[in-house]
Length: 332
Image (cartoon, rainbow, N blue to C red):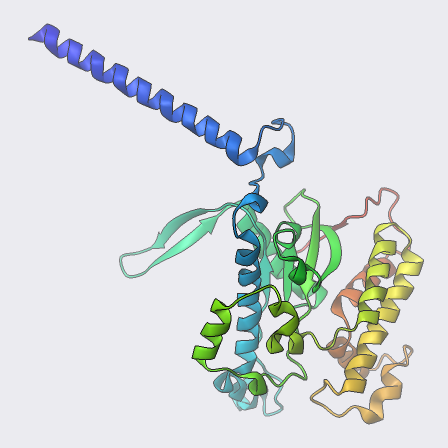
């Protein structure tokens, strides 16, 4: 009986060892499929190759589209808009409004549950979650609604990528990864989203009938981007190229010109909720730095232009000797 028992334990141990060996082998093979067969010393060898996933362009387009549609929905919500006139929030001068910012990155994440017996929520942990959080925080530095990493940009459809603007190339705080950052220019000032309202049934039908052409045809998307002109984009992109190349004097001039082009478009097309006819000459007078004029410029001009102009101006328009076309973001 003792011999039989020992044999049974030995057989079970052998079986378990084989199972563990098979699991390790499958895990190694899965790693080769997911990450490719590049050198372990290559940082990109640990990146998941999302581009190869079927339907990834439509999936990524829908993710960005969902965020932009929620942005339009917030500024179309009548109840939220009544808060502008709530004296407790705005002191009676309509200075308060609800807004939202977004950050996007693409990659893997570990999902887990957190909470108590009363409430359980899902949480996600990974470097890509942290990067998305950094993207969201950086929107405030650039004065934009949404920031996307390069990992997201390359997964989007061609129609969508045409609408994005490459703002800068940076190291975000806490990361050594060189990151090109993009935005989809979106504003609510001067846009009457109420006129573009759809029923829930219409919205569902549009979602089911999604095609990449939506980036050229959807009324919400076109309206929130109406302040951006082709001449502005050409001038801004030229400025970015010069800035990254270390030609900061010319870059500064082009950013200043691009900012003026956007301000002029907003004023000419009436995308403002306030009357500034009497202030127009002062707005374009760069020597006028009075508080009310600076506030209007900041509201209707381009935040990214001003951010990069201030960055270069603090350094007397001379790039550092070790400039590698990447800017460090030191705040979260």
